[in-house]
Amino acid sequence: MTPSSLDTSLRAAVEAGAWGDVIALIETNWALLTQTDHALLVDAVNALPPEVLAENPRLSAARTYANFLPVNGDTRPVRFRHAPTAAPGVLLDVLADLTSRSVSARFEGNHRQAVAHVREALAIMEDASNDAMVSIRQVIPDIRVQWAITLELAGELVDANRMYERTFDEALAVGNRRMAVKSAGSVALNYALAGNRSVAEQWLKRVPDTSDSESAEHAAIDTVRTTSGLARALLAANDLRFAEAAAALRAAPPADVDRETWALRLHVEAALARASGRGRAELGKVRTVLDTQPELHRTTGLNGWLSTTTVAELHMALGDIAAADETIAKLGAYEPLTEADPARVLRSWVALRRGNPRKALLLAASGLAHQFSSQRVRVELQLVLAAASLMLGVEEDARSHVAALMETLVEERLAIVLLRLTAAERAALLSDHAGALGPRLLNELDRLDDVVTAPLAASLTERERVVLRYIVQGLGPSEIATKEHLSRNTIKTQIRSIYRKLGVADREGILKAAIASPHLLA
Image 1 (cartoon, rainbow, N blue to C red):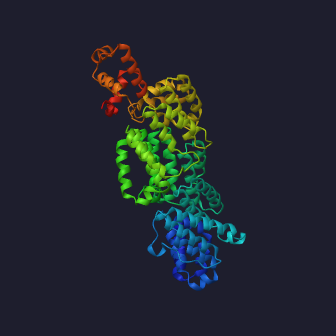
Image 2: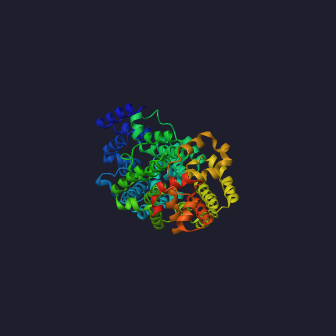
Image 3: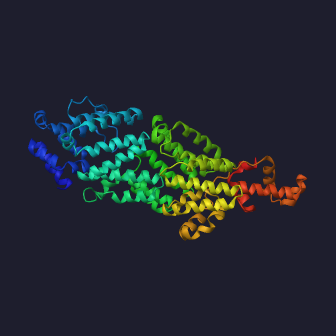
C-alpha cells in the first residue's frame, strides 16, 4: 500500500467508525505510518473509543507511544511534556512514560536525569518476559533511538553507539527502515568523528534506501538523514574534497529542521571551513549560533564539548594561540568523552606553537601510551612527535614518526591533519612520501599553503624579537651585527633559532610568519 492510499483508507475508516478496519490498517502498516505519516498515526489511535482500547490493550500502549515521543526533534505540545504515570504491568506504557520523561529532561539540558530515566527503562526491559517483548517489537526501534540520542548528548558515546547498533538490527527485523537510517547514520558519524573512515563507510553502505516510500521533498527534511549526511561531509573534508563535503552538507536536513544536532553540524561545518581557509568567517558564525542556544545546551554534555572544541580549533587555525589555549582550558570541565582524551591533541599543538617542543613531545608520547580506537587521535599525536622532533633538530626521529603514521593517514584519508603543519614542516617531513599521498593531495596541500592552519605563535626571546624586527626591515646578518654590536656568528645563531621556532626555512617564510602573527614583532 502506498502512503497516499493508506492515508485515504485509514481516514475513511476512522470517519466511518469502522474500528476493526482501523486496527487492521494500523497493525498492518505500522512501519509505513511511523516512517511517512506520524501525524496520521496519532490521529487514528486517538480516535479509537475507550471500549475498543479496552479490548485491544496493545493499541492503548501504541497510543501512549505515538503521543509521547517527539517528532523531528521538536518539543512536544505542552500537554505531553511530562507523561502521566503508566498503568502497572503494561510494558509499553511504562517504557513510553520513561522515554517521554527522558526526552523532556534532555530538551531542558538535564542530562543526568535524562540518562537516569533511560537506565530505568533498560532495567525494566531486561526483566520483561519474552511474550511482552514480542508484543511491542514493532515500536522498540523508535524508542531505542530516543534512548541512544539521550546517551549521546549526555556524552556517554560508547553506550550510545552500542544502542544505535542494536537498534539498527531491530529496525531491519521489523521493517522500520527509517529508524535503520537514523541508527546506521549515527554510528557512521561517530566513527567519522574518530577518524575511522573504513568503519564509517561500512555503516554508510548499510543506510537503507527509502526512496520508494517517501518523496524527495520529504526526504530533504527528514531528520533521520542528518547524521549520515554529516558523516559523508566530514569524511570528504578529511580527504580535502571540499566540493563533495559542501554537497553532502547541503543534502542533509538544515539546522532549523533538526535542532538537536546543531553542535554536530557546527563541528563538521567548522572542520570544512578551517581546511578551506574560511576560519575567520566561520568563527563569527559559530559565536552567533552559540549565542542563540540556551546555556545548558551549549555548556554541558556532548554539545558543550563539541562547541568548546570547535571554537578552540578555529582559534588555532587563525593563529590565535592565546585564545585557543584559553578555550582548551574550558575542556577541563568535561570528562573525556572517549577512551583517549582528544583535547590532548589540541594541548600538544598549542605547546608546539608556543615554542615548547619538549612539552609537546611529552604530551603526545604519553597520549600514545594509551590503547584507543581513534585513528584520528593517533595520527595527530604521531604528527606532533614528528613536528616537535624537527623543531628540536632530531630529523631522523621526525622522519621515523612520519613513516609510522603515513600508512594509517593514507588508508583512513586523513590528509586534513597535514594542514596543522607549516609549509616548511610539510616540505621537510613529507618529501619521502609523495608517492603515498598522490598528486591530488599534494596539489591541494600546495594550493592551501596560505591557509593558516598551523599557527606561528612561537615564544621568541627578547633578543630574537629584536633580530626578527631587523629581518622584516630587510637587513642581513652583517648589518644586524653592526647595529647590535655583536658578532656575525651570534646573529646567525639567533636567526637559525628563529627559523626553527617558526618552522620556516628562509627569509620569505619569516615575512609570511610576521604577517600572519604580527604580535611576534611586539
